[in-house]
Amino acid sequence: MVLLDIKNLTLEIDISGSWVKALDKINMVIHEKQIHALVGESGSGKSLIVKAIVGALPVRWRITADRMTWKGQNLLTMTVKARRKIIRKDISVIFQNPINSLDPLLTLGQQLQEMLPTDNLTKTWFWQRNKQKRELAINLLHKVGIKNHQLCLSSYPHQIPNDVVQKFMIAMALASEPKLIIADDPTRGMEVTAKTQILKLLSRVNQVKSTSVLFVSHDLLAISNMASYMTVLYCGQTVESGDLLQLRKRAFHPYTQALLNSAPSFRKDLPPKSPLSSLDGTIPTLHNLPIGCRLGPRCPRARRECVAIPQIRRVHTHFYSCHFPLHWEAK
Ligand SMILES: Nc1ncnc2c1ncn2[C@@H]1O[C@H](COP(=O)(O)OP(=O)(O)OP(=O)(O)O)[C@@H](O)[C@H]1O
Ligand code: SF4
Ligand SMILES: [Mg+2]
Image 1 (cartoon, rainbow, N blue to C red):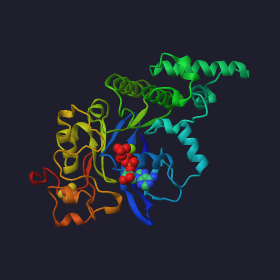
Image 2: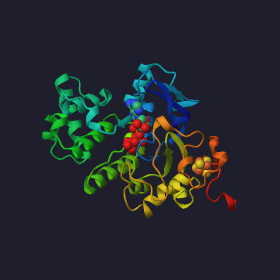
Image 3: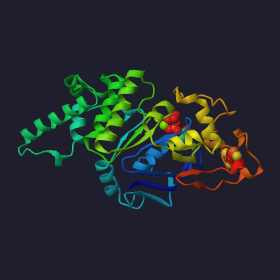
Image 4: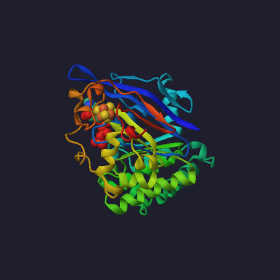
């Protein structure tokens, strides 16, 4: 079953008085029980997509799409209230820089208990319900590997270390028993043990609860261990998507290949702002977007035709947008 279906999502933002397409015809489909990776260099628009899905963008920005549905319901035309209800019940987001999405004036315990759905409370009286909420919160903290629940629940966000905040955010995400968890770069800057714990946790939730995960990351090793499907983004355009093993074996888009080559055998993380070994130059800023295929100025295969935006082509469940894809000579 398709949960999230995005077709031709375009986002225009105003920068110094002129409108630029920060996202240009983004396509992405997330299925039930799927771990879907969203990858791309720093600045490619991954977090903007996350914010567009949950409606967390400034209202003055222009957002359009041919389709943006959650289980068939149109997210763009529904009321703000209806959309909030879906986000609260079915979609949990772990934003990049999670500390910013916590309320600095409330303890973590207050914030976690607030997230617990009241439907799960079986007790009648408010003091019994408060006790039950606390028990559920403690249970969630243990699940995500936070042993000192007492300290965590009574602390304010700035009082606990980053990796604990990240685990706490996962507990918050699990509290509503969502259908989809969106994790925006949840392991950035973490040391290996904490990173491994987070990844195992997300994989376990996916397996045990059948929760889908949209895993946004630079970490190709983590992605290869977790995800079954991958969408590759370059400079606000989706350039390729498909089954992860298929893409690793036979990428059609030069950018996907460059990304894979930059992390040989998927053995190492690709830090933000790192140059891609097989491509010259860096990702353009939104002020200087090339026309047509945005990879053009960096692409070794570019030709005159690339000033026109390439159409999406499809081979079974594999999609790519390139006028001169890799391996095409052989087809
Ligand atoms: N509030 C904003 N105002 C203006 N430009 C913005 C804003 N937020 C993002 N951008 C621009 O949009 C582009 C995409 O940003 P985004 O944060 O989505 O990238 P990203 O792929 O998530 O990068 P990273 O991997 O570093 O998190 C960048 O060029 C960024 O500068
Ligand atoms: S369309 Fe052209 S510039 Fe873009 S990736 Fe393909 S070959 Fe390179
Ligand atoms: Mg980001």
